Length: 275
Image 1 (cartoon, rainbow, N blue to C red):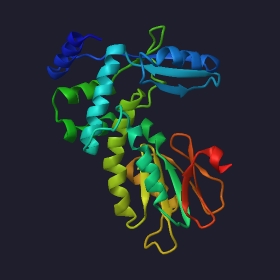
Image 2: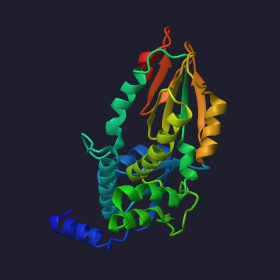
Image 3: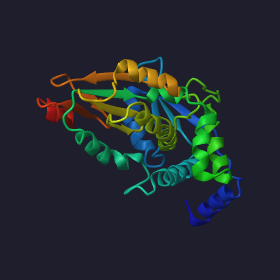
């Protein structure tokens, strides 16, 4: 893209005149996915894959090419505003994953380790709540309006049909911008409220994955019942599982696993290293 075109896009954004196009969804056979990604990712590096009723097909949600650049820029800006710094490389939240793994292993010796997956919350978080959490970072000007328009984008298939079945509800599934907005909501709702409900209990969250460690001398009790009660209070949804020393490992972000060793200490590793 030429510098002149970039300048035009920037000016349209600042003046509130930039209009995002509807999102496109394509359905790809699983057997053809590798070839499709090889041909697509160089020009469209931020897409979202999903599954539906047909186990042999993958849905791919893609923004228009210029919109992709705008959404990547929004992701980077929101990353900086919500974390107080720019990512070390690129624009993705995955830049923080190593510190997430480090924090998990600093939990040390625990009696029980819980994994709370908040992905189901994407389908029930209302758009009004997302905008409410974003507004303190960006104000109510052109950027806020652009984020608002993104949240209301329709998803269109190759036949021109609106596919409301593909959307996550209030959060369109479009790669990094979806993850960053989801993370901002959870920072304000979950990260702020969990310590109030369970003071002294260690937890670490990376986007939708939360790991919570408990010990016998905790002043308050956290277990599955308490966890689901918290989710109900916060109007979130998720699934809770747990392990103790010697139990099978839990899946962890980016194809890692997490387990408690014979001393009940938390470890993160690649599956091949464990087995």
